Image (cartoon, rainbow, N blue to C red; front, top):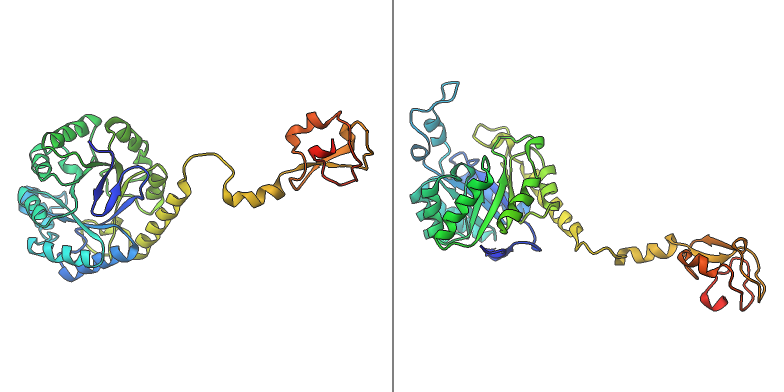
Length: 341
């Protein structure tokens, strides 16, 4: 498996900026104009990609299945399908705005459609982590795969990766995910990001369903390579994902915050940075004469004081200075240098 590879024109892996996926999901409400609008929102926010979901309700859920309130699941999901004939148009529109188009396919035909459209990557949803037939078909296309791991164990992730590798696909990002909508922060277990990285030596990311931007920012500080976050044009709509999705201003704020955090992560080398150099002079102390010191006098502790700025000999050398003789007159409040003793 590759530690780094490209999605579109972006390099994914350690040391590179976080690839931010704005997850439109089903928030288009089966409205083509709204789908275009969501792409515009994602591009304006500065996201690297916008992602949809390619499913047909009758191929996703049993027609007989219903929610506790009696709502038929197949009928419900049918309201939020992204028509197959829209995919090409939406991809072209996204690329015209310099943002990548990605989707999660939920059946073989959807995989084939996305492959024909030459998508930059294919996302496998958490619910299909154990769907080996679908994973095999996706991997056979040998496109970069974003594999979500919600509800999964390390063993299940390993099995999915083995399936992908057998098809000759080596470009995979593992997405830590908690499949609860919304996810409570205390359930996020962000340390699992490092577990996935250490276990499989591939790029890692976070597919986040919490409310707000705190968790994505924390994950950025932990070094994720990809972030996926749901967004909508307005949260107060009926639909599968609107209630826990970010609104446009929130998405833009999150992207900006992540880019700021990335700048703050740094190299890990502990040195005096360039922005501290001016502060260092005025914040640190030097050895100064507390009173006039005549030539030849052995310097005593009461002859000196440690004050700012950092002139003369540094306090770390105080024990060396004590007992030495002054080779010239040192005036009160004058910094003591090595030339003085």
